[in-house]
Amino acid sequence: MKFIFSLSLLLFISHITFAQKLTKEEKAVQKEWEKRKKSMTPEEFKALTEKRTTLDESLKQAESASLESEQALAQKTAELVALRNKVIELEKAKETAKEQQSIAQVSPEDAKGTFYKVQIFSCDGNPDEETARKYTLGRFNTLGEAQRFLKSLQKMQINNAKIVTYKNGKATINP
Image (cartoon, rainbow, N blue to C red; front, side):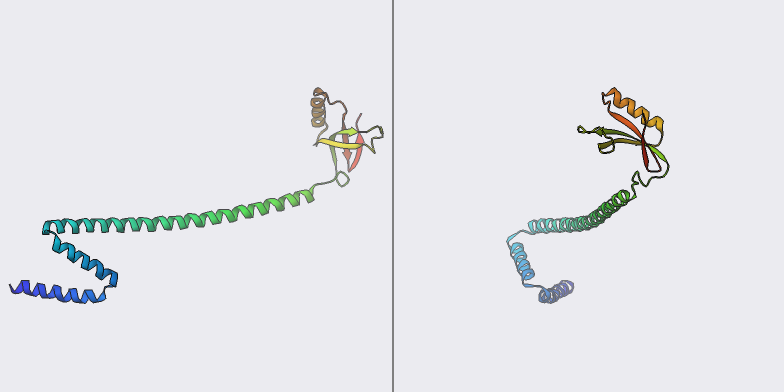
């Protein structure tokens, strides 16, 4: 009997101490549970508390899963930002490379050595080839490549194309 009394007294004191630390919302929940306990049989209350415990555990699991998902989302967002920055860097590098390529292109006047161009001349009634418009269809390092390309053009009925040889930037039309 002393044991039950001591236990009851201990529970009462802990209840009072615990109740002082609770917020208003927690106190309201506690009062609601006390009302439910009074209106139920001990078996029903036990089943209800077990269900609440199970739901609390499920809630904790869901919260931890949510936290893990948020962390994974933050990680993926950081990866996405890094990839977008890399894309921007690559686009800038591409633009820089294009600019350098356009600067590095050698004009026929500046070229050293020999190369061949297959060109079409548009006279517009003026037979002088130096004043005619020139359209370059291909640039080749060997005469054989240029001749093969010219033959393929002739098969397509483009007969006004000619091979122009450039030697140290000076053009000479091959017959």
